[in-house]
Image (cartoon, rainbow, N blue to C red; front, side, top):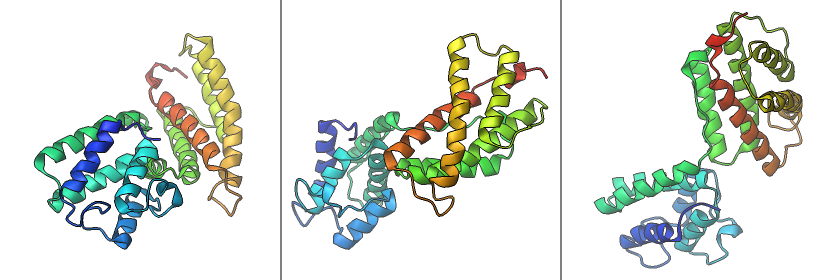
Length: 255
C-alpha cells in the first residue's frame, strides 16, 4: 500500500476529473486500450488486473485503486507520467502541476535508493548503466530481474575497492571476496563496534546463498524463479549492503 495520504489521493483525482470532458469514470482522453498501455508503459503493471477493480471497473476507479494499494515506487512512476502527460496536453492547471510535484517529491522519501560513490568506481559508464537498470527493476517491483544485476554490480564494486587499495582479489565467488574484504577491514580496525563485524560475517554466509540464488533462482538462466516477496527481501538486503560499503573510507586502509 502506498503512503499517499487520503487527502493527496482526493486531490490527484480532483485534478484529473477537472479536465476530463467525458464525465465521471473516465480519465482525461484515454480509452481502455490507451489507458492500459499508458499504465503498463509507466509501471509494468496491468491496470485491467482484478485487484484494481475491487471498488469499480471504470478507469477513474481503477486509477484510484492503483495509487492507493500499490507500493510507493510504482505509484510515483505513474504519477510522474501523469504529470508529464497532463502538462504537455494542458490537462493540468498550473496550480495543479505545482501540487502534483510536491506530492511526488514527498512520496519519493519512501523509495528504496541505491547510492553511487564516484571514488570507488572501476568503470563509471558500466556501473551507471547497472545502477539505472537496477533502480528501474526495483521501482517496478521486478525484483527477480534486479537480483542478477545487483550480483554483477557487487562484482564491479569489489574489483574497484580492491584496486583502490592495491590488493589482488584471490577469490572468485562473492562470499569468498566479501570474506577477504571483511578481514582487511578487521585488520585495519576500520570499525569500532563488534556488532558491525558480526553483521559483515553474517553477510559472507548470505553471499554464498546470493551466488546460488543468482545462478539458480533468477532469469540469469532457465531457472525456477524465486518468489517475489523473497526476491524483494534479498534485493533490499543487498542494496543496504552496497550502500554501506560505498560509504567506507578505503583511504584509511594500509596493505
